[in-house]
Image (cartoon, rainbow, N blue to C red; front, side):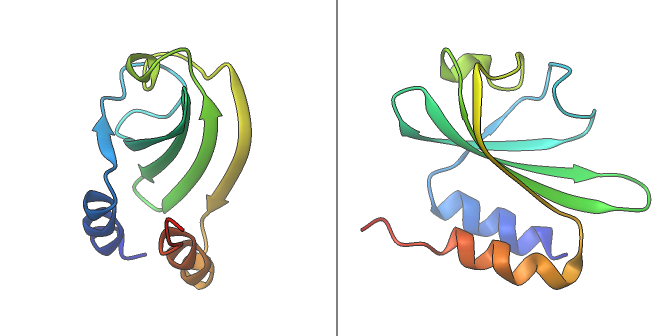
Length: 100
């Protein structure tokens, strides 16, 4: 997967990198968040392991922005995990949805 391309795209779409200090995601996971409604966030999580690199997209409700990366969400509304390079094009299309 071309995570560098995805990370560049996230910066242009107002995502903020969040520290991963909790236990919800594995150590070394890069978390990017964007508030889409009051205390509802779209999270893009890039997990890196020795043998795999995968991306998770999550829409979840947190009590505040500061609890992302520290606590588990209060509610998960959507969860998508991409581990296969062939499925990356679906994820890239997901990121290009317009704000209309």
